[in-house]
Amino acid sequence: MRVLALIALPATLLIGGCDAYGGADGDGASGPATFVVAARSPDSLSGTVPVTAYVEVTFSDLIDTATVDADAILLNGEAYGDRHVDGKKLRFTPWGLTPGTFYTVSLDPELTGKNGHPLGAYADWTFKTAGTPPDDHPPLGPRPR
Image 1 (cartoon, one colour):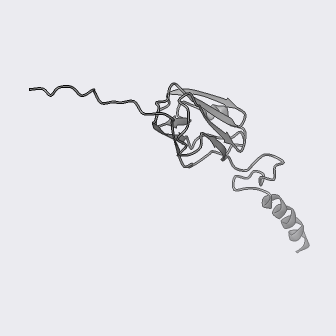
Image 2 (cartoon, one colour):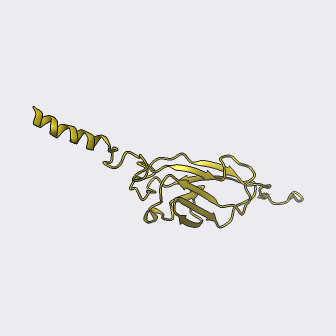
């Protein structure tokens, strides 16, 4: 019985300090046990975003750059812009925003941290650019006869 107790105690201590992936429990010594969004810009539903703005997302851990592709971050379902990774930050600079327009930002659930954890499902957020949207209607003229 003593032999079993001597084997079980160290095994319990070893396994008890692991997360679901077999890694550290997130005590900070070996990095976080998850990969989540820590901050984002511009703010959700902000209506004063300049058309020259960029989108920036800060994560809880360093980003695995191999997982940052054209679909890593999308505006209204499109990948029109440049992506840049700097440690924990992913910056997306669109090639042009339209005044007075709502944009929905989507993140790829396959984005992964250097800790090996994927982002997974993340709620999209929306912002609105400042200004008046362009007039898409032709000018009124005389009615055809």
